[in-house]
Length: 538
Image (cartoon, rainbow, N blue to C red; front, side, top):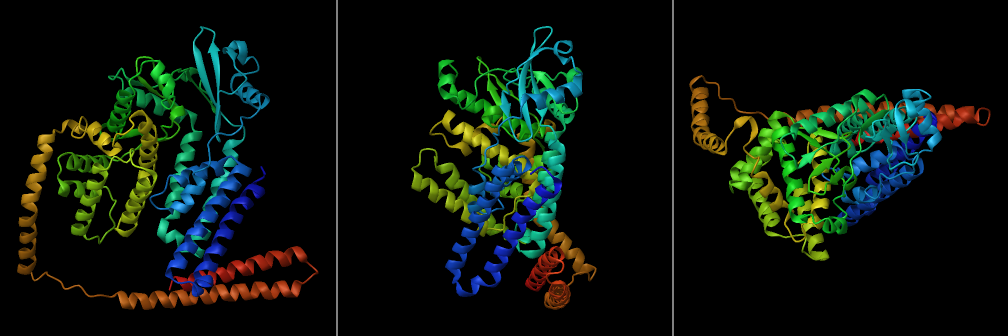
């Protein structure tokens, strides 16, 4: 299904089917269900939609696989039943045939790219993913290289799929409550940005150089050299890196590599990326990390990188320093400054809940726990996140993805170790490192802020009273609700009128124009769904 119409229709069928089933559950079926049955029905619906997306992605491939994988990382905003289903998608797809790859290389380097440019290229792909595949080769001077080659036509397919997903998201926003609950459009924007990154081989080359520059003073962390003079649109050429993958435990042991030290080095490399550089590898799965015989770590594939704003780095260091020094006020303030807490939250309750969560996380060695204990712990954390006024801003998607993958790599390398405590230990070296800031100066600043804030608040209150500028808030919310209800009723009437007109026209057309009749029937259904959605917003 490579045509624009076919690919778009596949995505829109998924979205429309999900919207219809969600509306049926919310407006019809839920009337006969009690609260517990409604919760179970919603969970079953999310599992169904996750399975449908997974099956469609498996059939269609390409961008739908990326979409499923991306959504599986958003467990912070999407239900577990959905993310569990799409999390089964693997970014391992059959490579395209050599004839198609040969055509791409001929277009990039000319018909005689071997031997004019390369001494040889292995026609068998060393690795294949949904957007690109890797072939090994050798230059005339004997240097081994890796060529990352975008799949032929993938840019067009990706843009078609992304446009279809944008339309689908707008439908879901209009017809269901999911858009408000999960900010689907923000998720789409993040997906669009990450995919554009992965398709830009020149941008990837620059990101690889930047990463290597950040670690130029650390001989134990690095990146492959990019061959700028050989890189072309759709083809990225870099030195070939060989080593042991961090999930090949027997090979690590045979090479005499200390697994505990490797885990520590991985975590510390990420703490530097997050707390100092503000620029980090967002896809550190075992295929993108090689361990050299001396234990050095080489990162590859810089198609998916994350970047943190300076103010977010400052807030993250505040959070980390608070945890390290057991200063719960400071840790909570860092959490709020990071944007993880919705406006209006009870900070006192948040502080107590966050303290309880930290106690549980730091006091539980969950890699040693049995299955039921792990499940109970995860349920407890999820309930805490859903009950408290938390949100995870879309800009932290990459950070959460990297953290989740990193924990999966570290667990077998350091069995029995508490991952959160390993993170804290790895952060001690870098928590106060930005812009030459010392831990002592941070502590003094925090102390001054805690002393001065109450006095400043009292002074502001006295100044307002002196200027007669102290206002009593008036609640206009009831009036706003009435106005919103009126607008919703007008929108619903408009949708019903359009739906009725479409249905009437379809009946008049009858069998004389069956194609037009079918189109009008579909439109009438969409208009009536719009009426239901508009009424729900009231």
